[in-house]
Image (cartoon, rainbow, N blue to C red; front, side):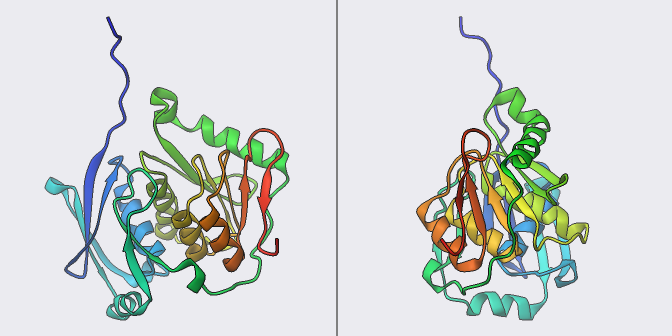
Length: 239
């Protein structure tokens, strides 16, 4: 007889922005205010909490109504974007600018030494309650290289990133120049989110995609693959 196995909770959560449907996530249903806030930040609807006029939950349907400043919505609609199906589990759809149209930016900062990154990842894995229970969840954390500032878990790695960025926005903590740790591969969408947030680097035990490297090099972000074991693979903007 097969033993009953642990499962990962997954639910759809929707978001409307100024009365229009914006996105539906397939996600782990916690830290949802952080998820919505981080997604709005990553898509350019808000730069800070001051741009978010209102975020109201619809508890029965697991959804949110967001009201942002009209000029922010106009700015998003004016950008050259297309609707794409992202590569990550849980990422139902997103708006992603053409990677080759992303503006160049200078290098934002360097990651810490490999030994320090391993220490930070050890702490990240240690906080992973759902990961330790199921082995089927992603985690992300913002760091100042001395400690983990915000941490989140989600069935989708993109969602986990939105949650930690959203937590920083809600706390009015600076994001630019920080580091991002993720447990899954670094996709183009994650690199794009990191660029919008002004992050210095993104590190993973896995590897980045080719499009992620293209975006990171254009936007001044350092990507670190294989950050936990062996020799890290470092992709610098000037490489």
